[in-house]
Length: 433
Image (cartoon, rainbow, N blue to C red; front, side, top):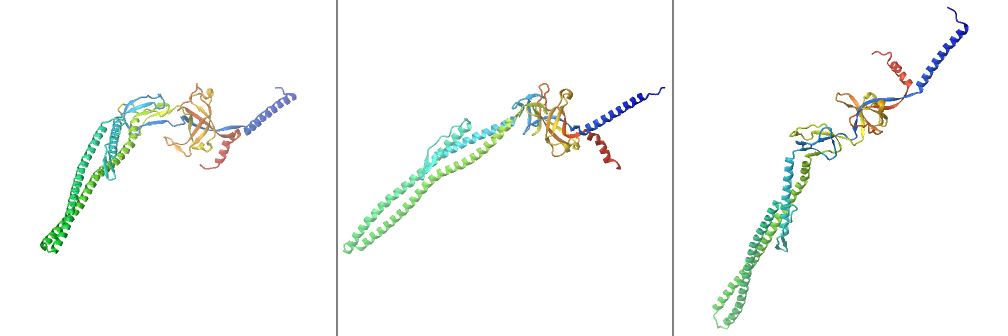
């Protein structure tokens, strides 16, 4: 084998040095790039799209028997659209019973008000002037019976007042007769006094014996006693007349007091019944359950007509479709230290290929204050991300879509990534397990 010439050896050495310098320069460039180049530090979380308003559970406050199911699973419903009907027999009966009770109490109230307006006591005098009952908004048999009761009670009152009037008139006639007799006796007594004076003069003149004078004196004393007794009787008859008049007033006052007390009781019961009626009507209305918002029906739990639904039991769910959607994800406790509200995110939808369609930018809106646990007792933090882009017509975003969320927690150099295993090894080296 021939030896290389000095020129060839020099050229070969130069090429070797060039390769060495090139490799060294490349290494230096890579190191410089690694020191200054920054990459996003990302926390990856899995989740799904949910409405800003929670899924609406359709529940019955009172429960009942399923009469008809008006929607199907997956059906789009509008706000206020009937979803199902419960048997309303007992609620309708309660509403009708309450309505009848209210109408009856209103009729009794009108009758009692008419009674009070028909009877008045003015300066001790009783005035009875029948006032008709007010006309009802809705005629009912109860009003006719109350009208009959009003007529009967006023007729009974007028009959009692008529008897009282007769007693008053009788007492007045007795008093007037006694007053006439008293005036007659007083006149007789005055004449007797004159006759007694004449007899006394005749006895003094000796014309008549004193025995006649004494007899006339005894007659005068007897008549005076009758006059005194008549005066006393007139006072007694006057008291009896006032008592008869007072009894007449008391009949009317007692009638008004009874009507007033009954009116207060009726108005109290009427107010209570009217207060309960809206609740009963609301119970009847709720037997037809309607959609609280526009959305999609899911998770129908009852389909058998005649099935019993317990109070508060979930019957179905309505997923809102017009609300803005947000991404809800679960972050592991080991990654939560750097996650906070306001961080930018990249949301990737599993339904669309990321390499073809890309993701959608977002921002962290909420991080749960404490750790939560899933069905398998694994700890996690709940994070909610608001999307900052609009869905495309050919790429609709729907509730329930699975997403992968990259949460940008900061920037790190490439060198720090390379050195991280070495630093971790250094911290754990020379330790016994």
